[in-house]
Image: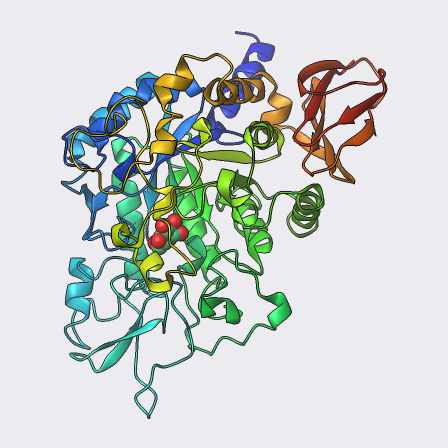
Length: 551
Ligand code: BGC
């Protein structure tokens, strides 16, 4: 092999190990994907049965929301055994089969590690809460009451009320950023860090390709337990918690995003670097400093590979000025940060409903996602163009929705079961009673129906993903010249061999734009009338993509 071959080979190996950069990740919410044993709840065997469907989408990886042992108070985001599968979802053997079969189909598998907190049923917490001097006594965040008996400070739980819960056996409070049954682990204790890194190693040894890391900026709290300051009214942003939640009244300066976190993230990265091609995707929830933290956590190559961003999960629509503002800020605060964008997930209203998008706009947004710099997460059912389901109060499961109902209905509306077969009573999801209702409206867009129509949303998503794969500039190239022209957003992506020009009308009015001069070829478009080679009228929801080879 000559030197040139070796250089090429090492480039190819690097590119393969960087599959995550610009990769498309398909998020599976296991309870609602496919039931294989008719108990009305999806499971691992069900996912395995559907791997061909996922591979046919053309995505690079799947991220499976938690399937570990759990009392399911927060539907798996409350883990009572990090090294086992909840019987509801199957067994470790079922997971091994899923992993092997996914790999055989060329899919990477990312699992969702919830390290910031455990369930109160975890043996660590069961021991920790018994006394102030047991071996696990400082594995969680314990604090004395104020002299008047009230909690040690003003920190709030995202799911409502104080972030502190009283434990009569210790005569102390413990910290929980979410439910009272989700006590926060104490990351200031190195033994806790070591135990959690061992958990990560357990799954890496089994062969997983990466982690989606839940609430990564919540790992550490301020040791001095200082009060969070109030946030001025004009700075409140309901992107993490719903507007009716007083969590938005605080600037969470001390309860999360602490500087000590960096050293832990570096430990975690060093561990994952021992395993080839492993990727870490950290979820950063911070309504004020999200992009800044993303920059801090992904800069260089010793921390996270990418961070999961909330900017396009917000209620506010993805308009041209907003997109430009987000990317300008990203550039300014975190030039080399690597974001991972999502429009929908298991925590927010599906974007088709949230942004009131018609079919054309849903299609356009799918293409936009494939053109923006960053990795991309698609949430199950998004590829069918599904809208949110209105789950009646009597059927609500999500404690968050029950707490803030009716002003906020919680997260059940985006978690209803996947629709596979239009004519089936339970849409092919189960033959039992589904844990959340299946929507008749969604069933109209079931996979079998869309599969049969070459012009359907499902085929459109496949084409959009294929477009990104065919143009490395779109997946991992540089992004430049982002410009807002009225409702239209334009930008360029660039690889070593090609430049791609992208234009999207994200508004409600038509706008004529001037296309750049040169030897461009159209690689994707949804245009009304083009009025000349250099000018084009972009109507709402239309877009134009052109590529030019580099000389
Ligand atoms: C997950 C939620 C979960 C929370 C607490 C989030 O970011 O996505 O579903 O309730 O973390 O673990």
